[in-house]
Image (tube, rainbow, N blue to C red; front, side, top):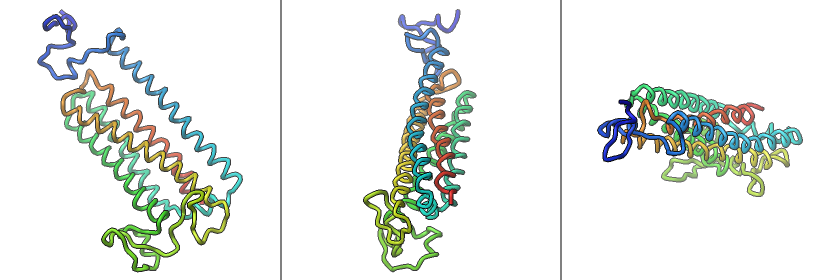
Length: 263
């Protein structure tokens, strides 16, 4: 008798009802097997990721055209980006891709504690990436306020003006690096620098949004893993979330040199 022959009150099960949820998972009725369902879902995710690539391709095309037309503006704007923060964020995402891949492997092998640890660490890396982007990159350029622990703060004269109980210190003349009509940086040397900042904020903020979406997907997987939804015979959501997270990492691999290293 196969496991598909086991019945409880007339309902078919893939395993006895006493087993964990992942061992009792049954594919949707319009699929012939769980393997076929897994392949279909994975193919659908790849198609969705292709549309995501098209989204960022538009940004990359805009970057290429504007950089060709206004190279000095892009050179000047990139000069204000700290490649060390960008490089650190790159390392964070690379590590998170590794832990995400390991969580899938752990799930396939039934190593549930390691799977949850790797998923949690991946979420932590994503949160750290966004925090660095907001606190150490966006905030100083937009407003002129540096976080008190930012190493770059020591290179400027402290105006004595602070915010949020002294956590942020204001540097005169540094802020105002904003896109388009919000640009008011007083020491700009090229009239097209607002265009550079428009490209920078558009590309990095959309990418950061994808990081937050990826963290949400992984967080859902993590919460459901405590209820036993995923295991060696059913880990579709874990792998699908991993595919999305790897795309987030891959996009940043292109953004980092294009934005931070051109000067």
